[in-house]
Length: 117
Image 1 (spheres, one colour):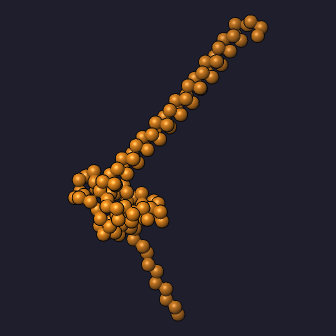
Image 2: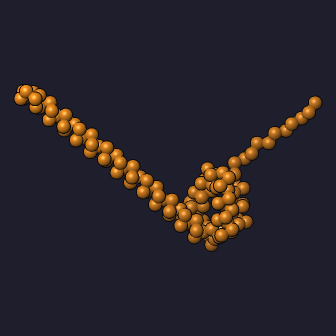
Image 3: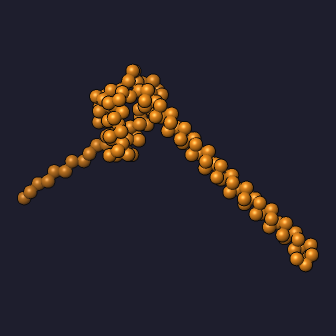
């Protein structure tokens, strides 16, 4: 550099800006990591509730549903966890009760009548 005070000041401002950008990127990474850890804790808590309130047969049925329809399986898991947290589950849910719950939560299917002329 030529030693011009304006050039030196400009270089200092660039360095400050670069340092701020590095700090922001590090902060965003920490926030994403914290969010991921919170999500993992919530999933672990949900699994613990399911193990507590579902019998083995009900858990197997729920796993089978989740394998074929992941979004519907997740909805059922959330519903069971909500019922457990609200205290509306007495004892454990067995396979027959799980079947009834799945029927209640299943979206209505449209039927088609085909008429031939």
